[in-house]
Image (cartoon, rainbow, N blue to C red; front, side):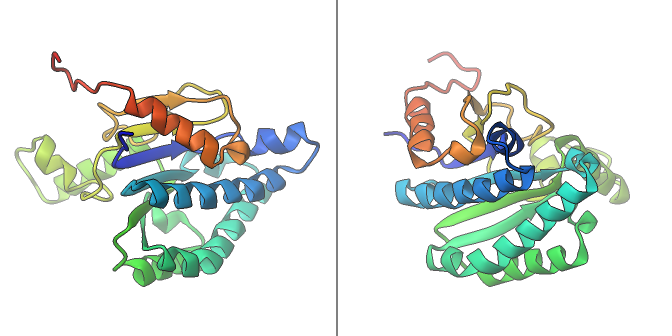
Length: 227
C-alpha cells in the first residue's frame, strides 16, 4: 500500500457528535481527543512521517467564551499528560499559527512540548493553533515587507511561512460531511489529494483512517502532467 508522507486533517464534528447524543459539546471534544491519540499511533504504525491537525482555527475565537475556555484547558491538559507517550513513540511537536493569541499557560505548555520533543524523528506532529491559511500568507507577506525584499518566488516565499520545512500535504482528510477547506493550509495544498467522509471526528478511529490511506494509495497523482 502506498503511504503518504504527510497527512493533514480537519477534525470536524465533535460538537455535533455530542449534541446527537444529548451531551454537552465539551464531551465531544473530550472523546475527539481519543481519536487524536489513535490516529497518531496509526501514523507511526504505517510509517507516515508528518501529521498536521487543524486543532483551533482563527475563526474558532468567535465561539462562545465557555467553549473556548474548555478547549484551551483540554489542550493544556493533553500537552501535559501525553508528552510521555509522544516521547516514547518518537513524536516531535511543531506548532503553526498565531500562537501569541493563546493564553499564557497554554503557550508555556506548547513551548515546553516543542522543547521536550525536538529531537524525536519518528513522526512530526504539527498542531495548527490559532491558525488561518489567509493569515499565514498575510503574515508571510508582512515579513517580506519588513525585510524590504524586491523580488520573491515560490521557493523563497516558503521560508516566510510558519514552518518552512513542513512539506506540502499529500493527503487532506475532512470528517463530518463538510466539503470545504475552511482556511486551512491554503498555500500548501495546491496539489494535495482531498478526502471527505461523513464520519464524525470522535468516531474516526484507526479503521476509518486506514480506509482513507487505502483510497489514497489507489490514486494517480499527476501534478499537472500527463501520465
